[in-house]
Length: 428
Image (cartoon, rainbow, N blue to C red; front, side, top):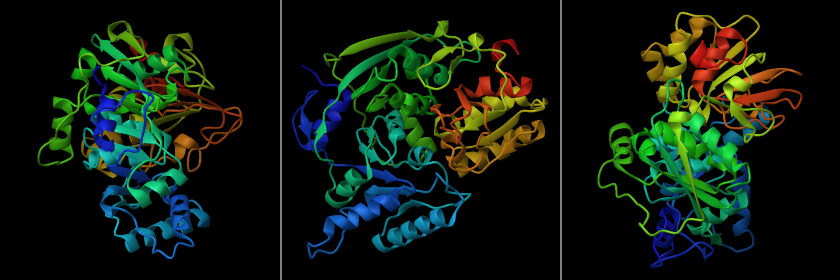
């Protein structure tokens, strides 16, 4: 029996000729990522060595990445002190893949890793963030772990007791209609599978639509794979993967890709024809409560958010700017825009997108995660409703359990900003 992409990656990383779903392995880790929660990892890491008489030592500093993004700039003395602690640890341990709060090299962790070529096809990537699934967009097996597990990785260089997940094959065909794109695809898939439909499984994406999809779109669909319960989402590496890593991330040398065997075993095959897809929207308070946007059109909204690790890249901002250009955000509606990284911020500035947003009445913010999870900037008031291009809409997700959050694409968000109500961009 052949192997899926994840089975091949885990076999290589575990030094085994083959593995199959259900096997328990201890794969070597190629990259270990944390953000400000590295402060917790540091505490756990130091505890590993307590009483041993050994000096705390990271197995390989070159394979650790730490990016400040959740509370940037620091919103409190506690956050600032934790960030200071991490900076000191980074310096003492020679961790070079460190992105501090800077306008030039800063940004959201799930954008920084691809942007700087830290992730490659066939890698095993672990991160102390549930949306580490993002990096399957580059053909890696990438998944989230806790602080204690990460401390173990920092010490040993491999992940312990990893059960090889079964894989669901998602085959996507057709061309996207106008104002429909990857965000609508993944919302539709989550609505089909449900929030638990891919628990402890991998979503492996295939089909003509995926082959033609740019890396930005692949990042969006892998990022939100976890919202169907998936351990990871993955797009097998191909020509687009190599193009992105060479042309946009500046990676040199060979970039081998991992593809599944023709006779790989899948627990389920899901087929989607995007040519029949309408703009999708996830309604409160679960990501799998997905409907066509026309079903909730006219719903009053107080805040629009465009950006995040899901939809904060240049093509996302371009789609929104094209709709907003020359128009105004509706009175009584606030609009926040936060690009996914400093590099994207600069590119959007050069292309005039940020000017378009500001002239329309939007507030352009620095790159960061704050509005998405409601810990820093853009909190909602009691009874308010937000429409957001982010990835979660659980009660209280954007800072207030007495508010409501709908999730959508940048096109839907921009069209709705103009009207002040949820709007189908096809009928603007």
